[in-house]
Length: 172
Image (tube, rainbow, N blue to C red; front, side):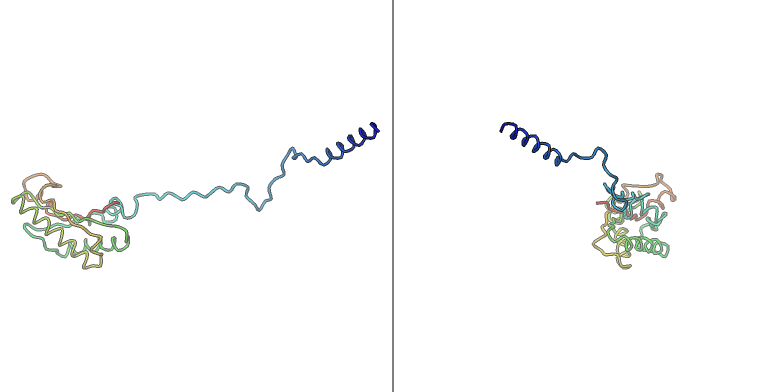
């Protein structure tokens, strides 16, 4: 009986070992229509300045981001209207863009007078932009008076360059 038990055990072991599945040594190629590990396509990085940024705005305006005023004046003339229309078109195209209109004065006059004049200049430019459809909530104003000149010197050329309103994009 011992032999029969040994024979049954050996034959059972052989039968079980025949059912034991080993992984193949070489895996088959995946089907051609299925990608094994899809690689996400990278989002292209935009080249150049970001729309709505100060650099993008300044590039688009090519100098029309600044308007100039006569001595002791804050009225918007025809040349200013053209520049402000370009600014308004930009702001209406880039609806997330926000801007500050900076008012400036030349060095003549008292500090308080020049701050008030810069404020009137900034508000005149802002109000014109609003009249062209730019939402008032997207515009702020600030007056620097004579504190931030772009031209140094005590002559008409320097003073003319410093009597201005400049539109600057606000980055968030």
